[in-house]
Image (cartoon, rainbow, N blue to C red; front, top):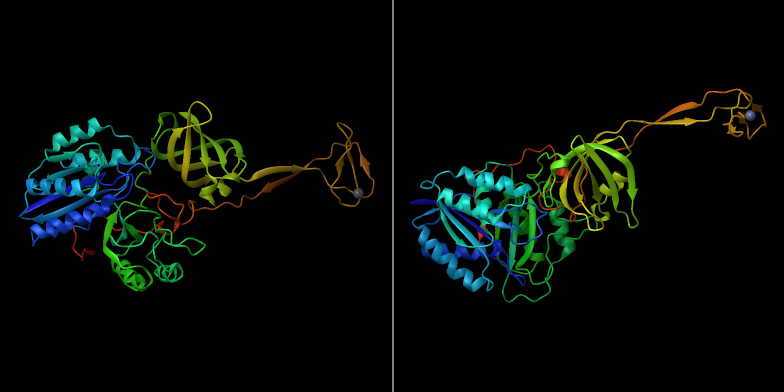
Length: 438
Ligand SMILES: [Zn+2]
């Protein structure tokens, strides 16, 4: 018996397909060759740095840990044959590693961690592949394939996503009773980010995507239960599988100095607001944030509501933390930091000085001109005395918990508010049931 890890990335094309869907075909085929093939964990769906513009680099990579009689060569041959059928662009990458025979497996974990926040050059991935000594297939997406294995071995927090796939004969338009489906999904406490505030099911792709629906949760049993309940209200899926995933766990929330940010680097920055917010037409909000190493403009797009509204209420001098990524600013030289999540660390009360009250009638007085004292608009009382202004402290009505965009707008890796403070299940070799039907 051999225990193998298989990492896969880039088995999609510009027209259709998806690496998770390819994984289902691969599992089906491997199971056909080896009846006793066993999955050691749920299949893993792994997302990397969301700010990398090239879609094949870990946009949705997958890894499988299996046990059986198949050799690396058997699996290599199967992947190559299937990939020729599945994606005619043939740009996918796979990596096969013997969990007991290969050495320095921790290098894949390091690569995964780097891939969450940085742009990892192909050359670095090739060096890691060489060092670990597994079998490499294909080319351009090796980073994703290796990093997906790294996540499987990392022991880090996870959530689950049940993905159901469309039958080949399905019509172009998806048949989903959104009202019934959203009712079911909202009735489970452990499901999240599936339905938006308009009761639309958010995890339903449009167009020629093989995915019929994706449902996110933190409890496999409840996900499976919810899925059975929505089956009468959706078109018949051809297959489905619960993937364990790093989605919505904030894995890329790694502290970075502002001065060290480079284009495409993701992470957490922390500092003081150095200028009052700029609210742009349409609702985008720009904050200048600085730490001891530098200053950067952070942008809160309108689509990140209610985060952009909270950002607009901040003031110069407030201390904040932002999760996001640095990109080239389009309108000028330099970088801009796109915000995915916001923490308000300190927002001091605002001091406001008001004119003194009238000693005769208590109305608020007006200035009678520079150096001319005050005049009461109500009773006409005048004074040239330098009366003291009254000091007010304005309390700030700002959230104490981190703020992120709403369901359907929150990005893949970002932990939503409902999961804050919850201990998430960690990636490990499976003890419970694995839910994959194909
Ligand atoms: Zn008065």
